[in-house]
Amino acid sequence: MELRQGILKKNDLLAADLRARFGAAGLLAVNLVSSPGAGKTALLERTLRELRLTGQRVAALVGDLETDNDARRLAMSGAPVRQIQTHGCCHLEADMIGRHLEGWDLGQLDYLFIENVGNLVCPAGYDLGEALRVAIVSVTEGEDKPLKYPAMFHSADVVAISKIDLAAACEFDRDAALRNIREIRPGVEILETSSKSGAGFAEWFELLARRREAADEAEA
Ligand SMILES: Nc1nc2c(ncn2[C@@H]2O[C@H](COP(=O)(O)OP(=O)(O)OP(=O)(O)O)[C@@H](O)[C@H]2O)c(=O)[nH]1
Ligand SMILES: [Mg+2]
Image 1: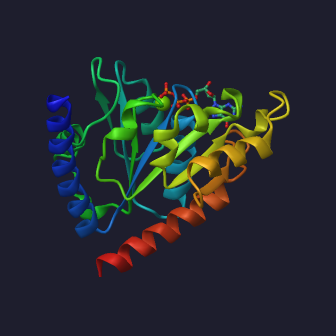
Image 2 (image 1 turned 180 degrees about the horizontal axis):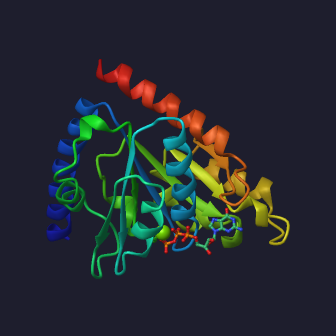
Image 3 (image 1 turned 90 degrees about the vertical axis):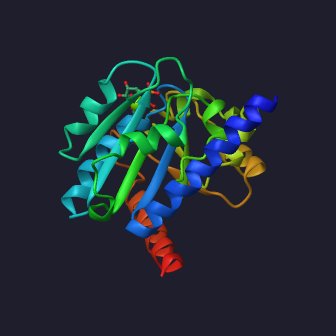
């Protein structure tokens, strides 16, 4: 128990350091969390591609236990991308982020996206210095995930319901899902996205621009 508290305290200090660096650099850091396969990489593939088309300077770090599959997918966008292999650790920690930022000029970035390890439990407890935590839950997972994994949804600034192109096939109960999300995190911004069709991405880009502006103003 004491050891765990010590680790969390060290993480919080490193995360505060990162947050200060991100703020000073004027970039918006976004931490994407979800269960395995909810669609984090698919969302980021489209996000990186489209933001680059509008002249935004973006980069991504992506965490997995093993493989660099996701980094290779994301690098197709042309953005700088680095894989973080955690070799068994079920979440990203602030010191992993710090180490993998080495050599990048943060002042040259508008957005840094961090794809966390697919896991609806552990990443909730680890601040990565992000300005925005986005929890993704896909329509194929069932509407009750926010109730079963409350810590993750409670810690989110934004919840994205993903794969809405599959909603009908899954008999997804949208009202129940929205109710459950709001029960755990009242007032949270909710997006409904499909990385296949692009549905919800206009709202996602509007949200990112708005949050980035707000972060800039808070820093000034
Ligand atoms: N139909 C549909 N499929 C999707 C969508 N987003 C992701 N998928 C599919 O869902 C599967 C998992 O997507 P990923 O983006 O790899 O999910 P992830 O959350 O990054 O997975 P991990 O990194 O392994 O945790 C892939 O087969 C994707 O093609 C979507 O919006 N619609
Ligand atoms: Mg992924």
